[in-house]
Length: 122
Image (tube, rainbow, N blue to C red; front, side, top):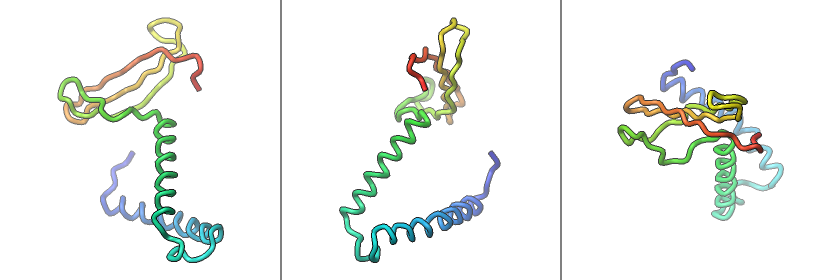
């Protein structure tokens, strides 16, 4: 991944937002009718927040993100998930294994966690 300046980050995010937001808004107006100013209320906002919550939880599950609170055993800083890999065979035998790599942003320690995979893996 290449480094970007703060201006490049901002400009790319705004460009992407405008590209997606205008068609999404227009489609919503067609689906729901009426002015957003007339429809906006806390119940609609709560419904959107609930949808967002479930999308976020599904994406975390899909990406296999670790739960909060996994801290470095050396400096107690929260670890960063670096990747997850599945192996059909491992050095520990012929069982399929999963490996998760975590790293510490403070002391640069890395941790590889290996566990046997369940038979129902996808």
